[in-house]
Image (cartoon, rainbow, N blue to C red; front, side, top):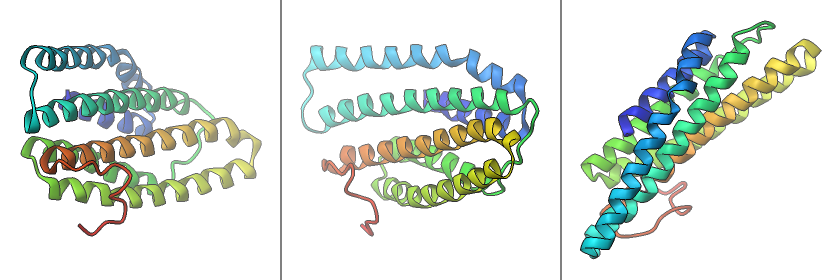
Length: 204
């Protein structure tokens, strides 16, 4: 499921940056397969809880998987939302894509990849590094939004595409937030400590 979500995020970003309506449409049409994976994983976790009544580390693993599963599905939904905005932005009038969007997209995809690697490898240190990257994504998000608003003020023709681009950028920022959630769940899984909302700015 993680690999599928990484792929759909990559395609959605590519469709946005290249104004590729066909690729965007393919992302939208493929969302159902990830929803099915989410349901299957939830069902397996609930079966394990009911049949084996895990405790300690095993229980933490199941709890973490349930939370990560939800975050992954929401990431996929946000990628679909980005693809839908990309379809709109592929048509004229065309608003220039802010240069910093590439950096924001790169950081976000790194966060998604690294939070999943941290989970697979049970690497709390890598998970904490993912959390720290979120501040930079937030800064880029704010800078890009300011640039879009400025363009919308310059011309009424920029308002409709500006709103679509604004929405896509916010969805990308939310994907980074979900990657942060997964990273924090990995810390919980490895160390047994609930750290959501408490790791920001931490040097631990």
